[in-house]
Length: 273
Image (tube, rainbow, N blue to C red; front, side):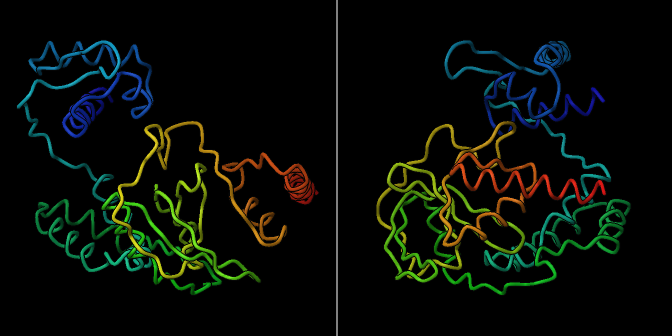
């Protein structure tokens, strides 16, 4: 609905201060022409939106303007109380803080809205562990997270199977949880690489600022991120690639790419039969 979209634009402008029409169109899944019409509507209703041209330009609100639109609909309330896998929160050391924040949020909601939160909590459980829980150690995860928050370089020992631990140092870019397994995405020796947190040893945040590529986004709206992964055995790489389905493309080596395609085709033939 257009009214919901106008509210979303206002909140996005307030959070990001300046955002382009293209970014708004991608976030809200409409055309840029629709965004421009929405901006005209906001301006006509008295909202002080301004556009700046050129590099670094975009749409913004006049300094000091604050919208007071904070209402949540039923679906938004339910999503807030569902999007918190307890295992992953505990890994990050945020389980108690997450519970406290949700308790405060629930207390601040009106009675009818609290019913929506309770409705979702009683009917849907999100468990990221899988049926075969690897129970991997994530002792280094708090140190990695601290380096991310402090935006400083990270040094650690990385142990691969059948190999002695080797020292690595680089710029941490983000953390990814695939099921119950944590991975660090980092810029090391000029390349974007991933490291399984359970294989990290003796992690240490360095007193050096991390350098983050300006265009790096851990969860891009469209397109993808090319990364290099290292596996000890080919079968492990094959199973990893297949676990992502259509969300991952193997670009090399050619032998692995061919085996992924062959395995995917076998799955399709088995399903068709």
